Amino acid sequence: MAPTGTWGELQDEVTANGNLLCVELQRLRGLTGKAKLGRWVAQEIAQNLRDRGLGYWPREILDVAEDLRATQQLRIYMNNSKVGGLINAVLDPGEQGDGRLREAAQGGSAAELEALKANLRELLDN
Image 1 (cartoon, rainbow, N blue to C red):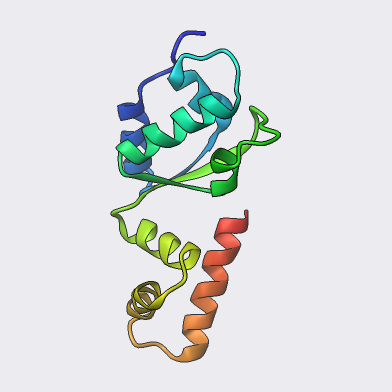
Image 2 (cartoon, rainbow, N blue to C red):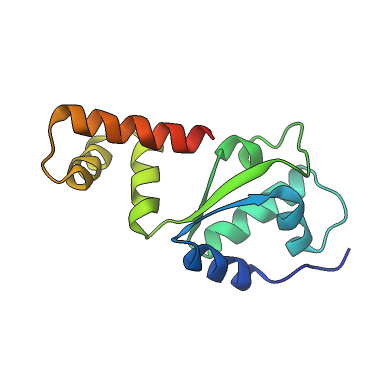
């Protein structure tokens, strides 16, 4: 299977789309030039994304790589962007992430912070 586009073009598309983009696995598989989607191809995809500063969710799709389907979607985001920082703050709980979420709420009330967290969780679940 011939590659469809390049990893650099995908990165540019993510950036142009506000640092967040949903992509089907079949497209990512195409970027590897491989015909079949399996554990080793999933690892190659994950490494190519990391090499370009891109994060992905749900992480289990590539990290566990069980029952992969070409139509599964990943949310791809720039790690060093504001949205990427917020996604990572939700995915990796800790003081630093909580600080980033508080900063995003810009001194809002605790209720506003919880609403922001809920909105981010909903975004990540869809």
